[in-house]
Length: 291
Ligand code: COA
Image 1: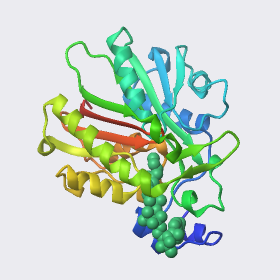
Image 2: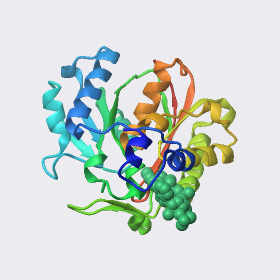
Image 3: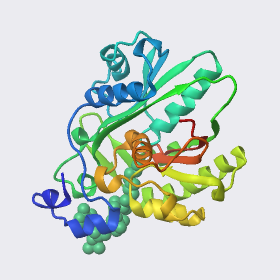
Image 4: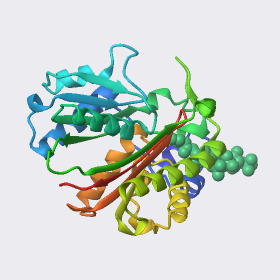
């Protein structure tokens, strides 16, 4: 759905949306399950891993298809998996929270984990509310994380949550997303910069060492402001929000999928993955690319 299509029913323009957010178009459709199955299968194929050899499925989603059961077991069944499966909801930080959880599971006996971020945000958007409708979209991304006894490529994490700010971005049962955009913007830049610096320090790398920054895709101006403060030029930031909008916990895997498809990241490269979202939650990690 393009900005022009949106402006046919909303009091907005392509110019406003592009200038204030960087978003030009977004994908609408699917469910957390259908998109998650698609992304999960592609990740398994790409990693040449049989579904039966995965011993945990973690699904990051803000928009599960039902309150219960969780969507993860349903996806696991569709993919032919016979392993524990659970949803993780940390809003737009969800994928990085799931990767952090996967790391803990790998440290305690798991061998191979499928992590999926899948969102059906459009279902919870009031399409007559221009504040939210121009931002949110549907999508899914996934990755396979394997235990390697000789090498750890998940170098550091810095996660946090500040529940005092929970009312800044909400969606009540049966309701729609609502947000204090300006306040979320301000806090987002602060927590991204702070957690990114902590993750880099913990990993023993500097901003100059990073091949890429793979940020949550909410607003190009948030990415620009954070990169400027971290002394990272925008050429090293992956941006897909122009085509995909804000897909919450799907945005980081969609961004590094795009980076891989465009040959922007290679084995041994350091990357900073960083996100923030409702909660407010945030999560940064430094990883060394292993494939
Ligand atoms: N189309 C056209 N005009 C719009 C508009 C829209 N979709 N939304 C707001 N406006 C108008 C406002 O009414 C205001 O008009 P006024 O100056 O006459 O009062 C003007 O545009 C500026 O609005 P403002 O809210 O100050 O814009 P902004 O630059 O703060 O951008 C957001 C708004 C939501 C894009 C921005 O604050 C943002 O991205 N915040 C973070 C959101 C986010 O990342 N959420 C996800 C977290 S995971």
